[in-house]
Image (cartoon, rainbow, N blue to C red; front, top):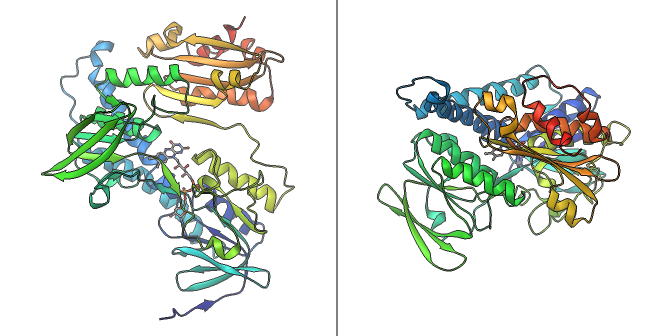
Length: 465
Ligand SMILES: Cc1cc2nc3c(=O)[nH]c(=O)nc-3n(C[C@H](O)[C@H](O)[C@H](O)COP(=O)(O)OP(=O)(O)OC[C@H]3O[C@@H](n4cnc5c(N)ncnc54)[C@H](O)[C@@H]3O)c2cc1C
């Protein structure tokens, strides 16, 4: 049966997906006088607000509080017991994400432009210079379309998986039962962050990954030290191994893993958490109707202005391949603002930092030493061990190190890896120098407050002398 269609005047732009780029872009275009619609099929804020950064970092904060309380004796304190109220931990995270969601909603309450439309949006070709976009029972026309549809959890081929209720990066917040034993299929960022969270809540945690190391993009020494630190908290790892089968068994699951070298192992666990990456939401967008075909992995190919091959069709955020972070998606909004409303000077040629929110944290920007050497560059490498920083000792958080890679010819910073307390904050010192195109000597000659962890950032470049 054909659905009734509501016809409307054409829009200057339709934005699909209320993620990190979609919401601010829709507002910016509307402020510039464009008639704009923003289509969202779920909750405002996308992955980051609803199940990603916001709630995960909130529960990680609870886990850290529990960890610090348990090691009270280190600080001369007696903390007799630390009890975890797991539902309360999740409720706290949910209330924080609800604040973000509510604040996004308020932005649409007092205005009809941008117009917020609820429902799945799909392209239905082009006619007369306009894209046709269906959102529920509406058929919109738009001169331009911006796609910001994000990603969803990816599920590797595991026999029996489709019949099971497993945890993944989108539903973990709805599981109020503290796992007795949770096995993670995947030792990337989400596996490590969530694995440490559950461990500090009191779960037994096993992380399985086919790679030779955790965090496959990172330098071996960083990955190895982080793994060792997580093991010291009781997290078990099975590397060069993959989960091949899972089945329900009484109150839990029996999970079979196979090692690359051969040999199988069975785990009886209460929960299986699939943390094997994310897949782009590009397969149900009607892209074929406008002549666009995503790559085999589902990501869209865009140029450095975020333009797809189809004139007037732009892509932002995780679906455009490359770095998949909230801050890069948000910066995509600035690129599109520059391309659609400004002088077009802003592009994806940018310095992209990121962090892994384990404890200790990993802060990263630019090239690793291995990458710079593979690129054949003449480099110098500065290093500093966090145990030699006075603030780290005062905090009893001396694990980790800073490694900074500097171009031998002009002293510019090419990249840095910081494994240690507050590394997600400290990395920005290097980010700002890289954006300024400044030599490391600017940082070497600066005065940093004592005692601070920021002194360690300076000590790492001072070690180049
Ligand atoms: C557990 C977890 C933790 C994370 N932690 C961090 C972190 O600490 N820091 C960080 O930088 N990044 C983190 N990320 C990644 C971050 O969440 C994403 O990179 C970011 O949200 C991507 O934004 P986006 O704009 O591309 O898409 P999203 O934020 O995912 O938004 C896409 C939106 O599009 C909607 N949509 C999709 N298809 C359609 C359609 N056809 N019609 C209408 N609407 C549609 C979706 O419902 C969604 O709301 C984390 C991710 C996860 C899963």
